[in-house]
Length: 293
Image (cartoon, rainbow, N blue to C red; front, side):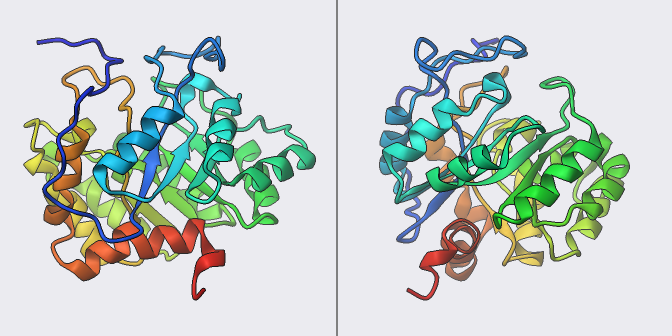
């Protein structure tokens, strides 16, 4: 059955799995409300409004303390909704922006003060028209001075072409959604082996959530578990997890965020790995000032 691709789950289950104290949802979004924060004219999809109040209520329901809010393509380079959410809960939120390559240093400083800690480069052609790589490289040089990092979003078929560029970036690089591997090819497939080879470079981190976008079998996404688990076990100090709420542009089903939380125990099977995935790693990357406090 086809669904409205912009719907988000109105009543997610209470997770059976309880995250460790201080857990961070390291990949989520806010959308609108559109009458306050209009969507970008150049967007390739229009989401249902998903404002900060709903995000914060979900975070509490799922048992998480903090959120890293990522600017999505439907808002383009207007980060007003993101900044508004960061200012509403400055202690427990950080942000990833999408910026114009000509943005001023003064504007970047304002974002930094609001809690932005990186910029996102999107190479998924069905969502955006990717910018020039030389411009992205110059932006990475500029944000290095702020101690920010880069988030990159791409799909597995584009990995080989992107590797030389990714290796030139002079900052920490966090890869969204495990590079969207081809689940049908398995963890021993050529492209996922190539992804592991890239991850051997310690400047690369990876987000291991979002099974709902990758699964061929559907909930509870058992076919994606081996991919996430292999990355967590190989690179336990450079993995992050996030809900991807409100799951924009899903066309097959409405993900239940409570179910997604329950899958954490399958991909990170020990308390030590769960602590690193949900607390230690995101705190080190997004709240370094609190480390050792």
